Length: 407
View 1 (spheres, helix red, strand yellow):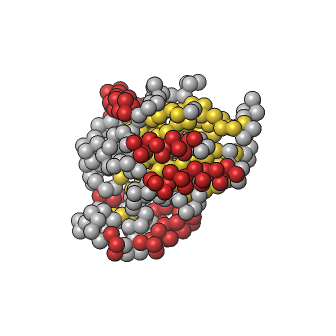
View 2 (tube, helix red, strand yellow):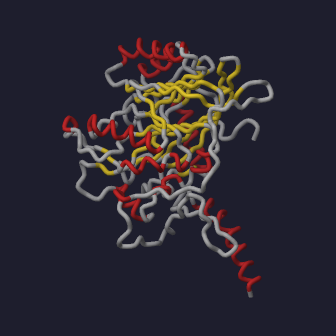
View 3 (cartoon, rainbow, N blue to C red):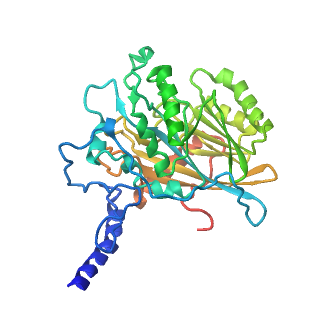
């Protein structure tokens, strides 16, 4: 009897991943790892409710949301040099778009974020359940954190805004628990709760072990023996100033010995699928000044990638996780990964790939679970949008690889 029971459990375990992968483009995805007794294995991730499951009436609301502890792992020295056979150091970097969590204080209804967190019994790890493995399999992951992590009240100067986002400071822990080491804090929502809210947001990230960068606070750190510099800017009505300041800031980081400089811009107009002239001018000025990679966001739409003087310019990565709308009119997006090779102080863009995705595991509504596409028709749709809008930039990449060259 025991042998027969184990056989059924083994068959179930083998079939479950295949079933999940076959359906994740259309409905909720629930992927669990079971032990030989059929019990969930604790990996730091929390299993999602099945599509037809009903959350308990007393499910934990968002303000008390938790992040389950991950298994103890040996401390990793990210600064230690790791050399390739040719003496270079390879960096694998991942960039996602806007990460917006928490409630919108301008709405009196229960927030989308609160509702979805309650469905998962208060454990925020559900947000990353379909991307955690990807984000942990790199050297550095960066998202644009568009919102606040604070208990402060709304910014009175923004009383007329439709959206003011606020999440509990404890929510910051979900980032490092799922492979996100760094966030950009230069966008139009970081001051939703005023200067006090921004200060607490920064401290919340620091307490969680997450690095951040903004215009006033460039980030300089060492990754695998490479000195890195990261800069971020909002460009709204600031281009004339930034056309001069950005090159100066890049050169200042280079003078400090930064071998790689990444520049993030929050720019463009919402719902634009390609960059305007000022964006393209700004990006090229930054590369000419020594930037090795340009990352953009704000439009909530994916934009084409440009290759200029051997450097990649990602004009917009769209959304990654967006709690501002239960059904955005375009939920497609992509995550950008790049491999940089650094040798003798020189950085070369070796290869890149994109991961076409949707900001939800459900095509009908936004469940806040970013999910890579598996259906070819959905992947082709993302590629088509990027290539079509590439006609609006000077040097669009010819192809959007989905795998690394060696795969």
